[in-house]
Length: 76
Image 1: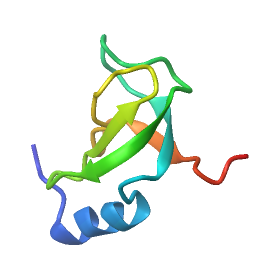
Image 2 (image 1 turned 180 degrees about the vertical axis):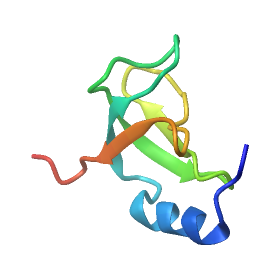
Image 3 (image 1 turned 90 degrees about the vertical axis):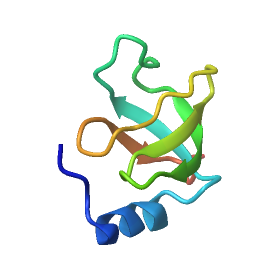
């Protein structure tokens, strides 16, 4: 597995700062929260995976290059 560059990791950290809200769009995992679940970003690790505390109690990361989420903290 190839790890993303430092530049990509920093870009993801700027896009998804701790405290912003996200919505899950795709996650291929048996334990994944349902699509549409929202949560709060707690950080981005060195592999550019987004660390999320999902509203349903799950703590699965959004894996860079595999899973998809979107920022939704501006949704009202």
